[in-house]
Image 1: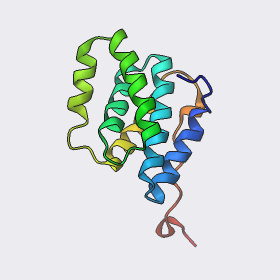
Image 2: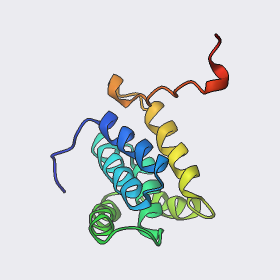
Image 3: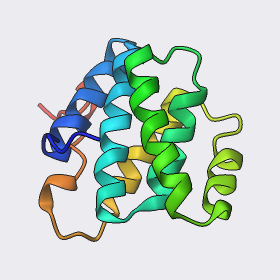
Length: 131
């Protein structure tokens, strides 16, 4: 695993941009990088959930799959099998949009104290703007 992670905020922005242009492969890649950061901080359930989703998505790119699989295999050696089973059950019938929402929520609730984990603010819709 590479230790050359960008700040989590950058991967969240990449994920949001990928979703906006329907770039599924790039969205899955951003999710994988976020999962790597979570695993390094000890958030194994969240990281496992994302890795299992990425590896089971038919639109995953080969390099992203390989990185996710490598992390997952390392994780299998270290943690309780129940966490991995829960992750496999968690992803059932999840869409990309549902998983992205989970990723934003999981990162926002991270208690590491790093303010870069906050999800970017939602831009105001035209109807929200008062003249």
